[in-house]
Image (cartoon, rainbow, N blue to C red; front, side):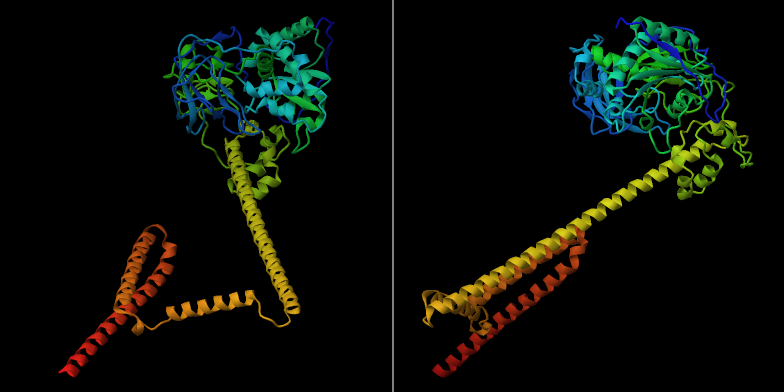
Length: 603
């Protein structure tokens, strides 16, 4: 692009609520980004994004190159996992994750070979000539996810455009204290960010690029202005006041546009799509150079760190390795927090791997960030309501969550809570409000999932009943049709035969005679059977009783519900066995009497 850039500074609006915690950003934003040396072993979770875990396409022992796909995206919302370096897959097993619960989940363990050898790449420098769907698929294939929040797969934002998108909003606010990863990225790689924004604008079909940045990042703003001028990129800039949580997607849109995202709606309802600066840089690298997301910029800061700063870290690097690179003093550290002090969480295990959403590792001392004090009863001061940027009633949500009144929590729009922690920050009673809200949200999700499962089961049952009823009616219709056809055939036959029997009648009579004869032979009294036939019948009855006993023993261990029916069947077989035995004894006795009578007659 060679055209003269048009850079406009727009009016800024305001948001309700919010707080002004100590920024503490100068600890880490004064030094350039430093690369962490490649570790010997990388642990890559299959789920480091929102949505379904990725599906492994490698096996233990596989040799891979840097950038190779290790696991592919599954379903509509998912993200692929790639090899951050070349090496050998030495395990696919559960490993501890960077999660406040300390849970374990499936991971691919990669042993680095030290070569750091890239796979063959197919960049798209002329991406404007490539179909949009192909570019969006490239984002999915490269595992690009949002790097400013929960890790939402980026390609989904570009596929699900329910309404026309007019504006791409670059989120450069980075409002949470301590975190400066985006600040340093903007200062050092502004061109990559804006080139990624140009690609994103093309994918969305948007007409405008807007930038929202806090006024505490003057150097980053200068770097972006200069980059826009070099690239000839038109951009509208809104310098918003430093206030937490101005970096929230909905809050930033309200600040730069003066419009509020509808409750339960999305930014796309207003024609906006919001992207973090780190995500835009990843979009640029993925499209132009075919580079998947295998590393990210992470702030490592806190008073227990010797060299706080921003580090470029390979995905899957143990967090302990990153901290050691920054000179951590774990004896001085009170805890290790992943994320910032407002929305982050304490890590129970620092051997867990760094993932795509790890934007900060905060290692404070106890003096720097004291442990929360025991909470006290709510005094109904209303400070939480004044601080809430989403215009909720935190006090009512607290009572509903504490007493598990989920209907009341939902009535007060608990799902609109962004869990920013502003309410807990100002609470004089030190009530951990966000924890209560998270609990209630989890319970609501569980209830909805159970309801969905029940509805699916009901639908399956009703579908089965309808199918069985349909089959019954079809069977009845076929039976009536056969009966009608048979009646018509008999009537036609009676009209044509004039009372004369034919060969078919003779065949029917012969068959009936054979059936009667067989029935008579079956019902023949035992006394008329030979001794040899009775012995065979007794042996057969004994065999059936033995097999029935064996089935009963197996059923008592494996299928208790079958035991009553098997016992009933066994009783009938034992009765038949006794009858056969009695018949044989009776026949033997009769034979003996006959022999004695003949002997007496001969004498």
